[in-house]
Image (tube, rainbow, N blue to C red; front, side, top):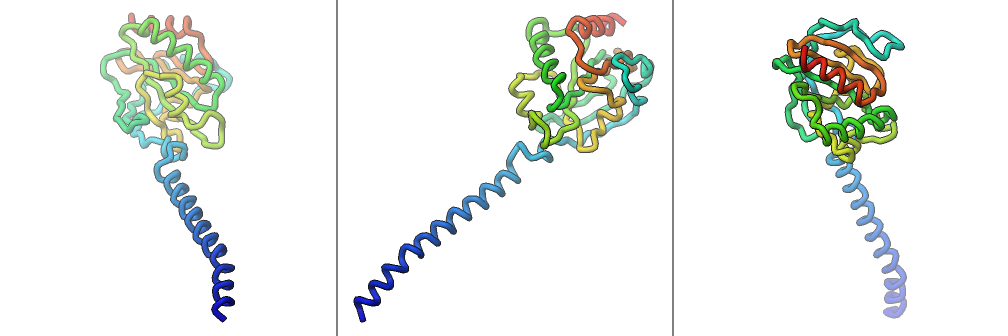
Length: 213
């Protein structure tokens, strides 16, 4: 009888160890999944901000790459957060501004960001004109997500505001095609809006006109 009981116990032991190992692995997987949801930067919600916007510009006319129709309008005031949670304000502070709206999945944005950053690294930009950026239209199902990683890779330096899931900041400025630039004079009035990929020479020319206006 003793021999039979020992043999039975030996047969059960491997199955018991297997069940324990499977249970431990299952717990590890569950913990990892919880950590990814809570802490993972690739979750769509972690890329959104909660900006406060005051003001509204008319919608960008369809098929227009350069739009003067909003000229003279008060530029919207935006208070939001960057990817580190720090406050960023775009408001009438007596300085001219160039505001660029970027979408991580847009190939034209992916081409323009490194060009603009290289120009800023080389020249410092145009004196008297501050460049701001807005990360908008984020979509975890589209390429090059998350936007924060993309802009980190490009060593993007202009102050940035995270748009919300409704693209409130983009819509308030008229929702042009990406990359979408809104140029504002030192009096807080819109001077020009430009939709689509823009060469550095043109951007520099517009900003120089802003600086002297």
